[in-house]
Image (cartoon, rainbow, N blue to C red):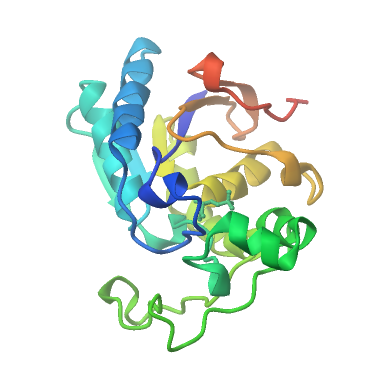
Length: 237
Ligand SMILES: O=C(O)[C@H](O)COP(=O)(O)O
């Protein structure tokens, strides 16, 4: 039996401003930092001691993971960063105000872009101020210019299979500090959810999701450590 904690980053500046963020490297707000520390306290209270933290290459997730480990008093945890745990790439919506985009294109279209399983937003223009083409983090990597949840899962899953699953199967406890949609991709995978079932799954910011896994990595229990900020979880068969 191993234990996995999934931790979405704390509130970011663009969460606060209600802007589509995706791969833009926006930092945490003061509230987001406090949420990250609180997440760490809950992790300590739950007695969780991971040997490894997997995170993305985006500041808000890396800092949330670091701050949570620090406030949990956990030292000597290996930290592994990879772009494949990044937030889903928001394509041409990147940087736009979510409410203004809904007013312009309609709530239904924005819901399709945000929560449909396999409809990506329009691609990011190559000459956009948000282009990641020359970002040293992605040099030599085959990076997307927009992503649906499906194509996010298409790059998360090989990483999960190669790097995360072997650690869990080896009996280690693992923490992943990442993003709303890269974590939704992992939840779909772990809980065996259909393309429809994942649509309604929301992950709250910096509320540790504690999942116990059997030897085949099937969830045997799952709960948010802050029950007051929990969102509904999939049924465990
Ligand atoms: O990238 C973003 O804007 C957010 O982190 C997640 O956005 P969503 O709630 O629209 O999926």
